Image (tube, rainbow, N blue to C red; front, top):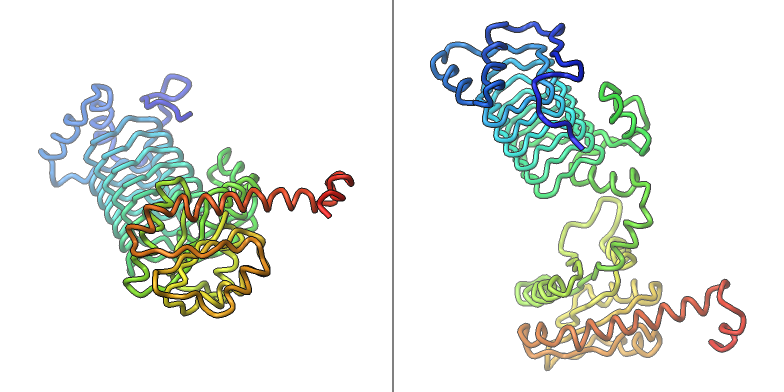
Length: 392
C-alpha cells in the first residue's frame, strides 16, 4: 500500500539537506500544502508570473500536490516519492533525475516536461499527458502508463520492465529506441528496495516498442508464466478468413458475438512478425487457442492455414461458409481423417450466423474439446493401465 500524503517524514521533520533552490519558493509551497489549499500557491503564481519556481533538490515526499500549478518549475533532483500529483500541472517542468517512485500522476499535464533519468518505479501515470516529454533514461519499471498520451515523447533507453501500456497513444515522432527490458524477476525486487539500481547492470534486452516490451515482460519476467499461458488458452479463439470488406464484416460479427460469450477472439489481420512468415505466426496463435473458427467463403489463404494447423494441433477446428458456396477441395478429407475438424455450418448472412453461432459452432467446439481432453488423459503414460486398455 502506498504511503498517504503528508508533509513530514517518519521522524516528524522534513530533511531538506539536498535542497538547492529558492527558500522563499519552498516556504510558499509548504504554506499551501499545510492549508490543503492549492489555490494559495496558484494565486501566488499568477501574481508573480515572472518567477519560475525553483525547488531544486527539495524533499517533497508524500506531499499532496493535486491541482498545483507547477508549470515550468525547476524540480530537478526533487524527492517526490509517493507524492500525490493527480491533475497536477507540470508542463515544461524540469524533473530530470527526480525521484517519483510510487508517485501518483494520473491525468497530470506533463507536456514537454523533462524527465531524463527520473525514477518512476511503480509510479502511476494513467491518462497523463506526456506529449513531447523527455523520458530518455527514465526508470519506468512497473509504472502505469495506461491511456497516456506519448505523442512526440522521447523514451530512448528508458527501463520499462513490467510497465502497463494498455491504450497508450504514440505517433511517428515517439522515440522508443533501445527500451530496456530486464530478464529476471529478482531484478524487479531489487528496484523496489533500491530505486537507484541501474537496470543496465543486470541481464536485459533492448527493444524498440512499448508493446513489445510489455509482451516480453509478461513472457520472460513472469514467475507464473504457466498460469498466463493456461489463462490464454482458456479464452482465446482464432478466427480465420478473407479480409476483403464483405468477408471481414463476417469475421467482426463473429468476434463481437464471441466477446459477448466471454471469449477473447483474435483476427489475424495484422502484419506478420519479422523473421516469421504468416503461416508460422498463425500456427503459433492456433497453439494458444481454445479452438479455431474458419470462414471458408471465397478462400484465399485459409486452405493453406487449415493444412498447417489441423494435422499438427489437436484442437477443435470449426468452419462456416456462406450459402451457395462449397468448401475448398480436400477439406472433406481433413474432416474424415481428423475428428477434431467439425462439420461445416452454412449461413445466409452475418445476422443469421451471429444468432446461431453459439449453438451451431461454439457449443460443438466445446463438446469436441471435452472429448479431446478425455482422449489425452487416456493416452497419457500416467493413465491407469486398465483405462488405456479400454481406450484400445
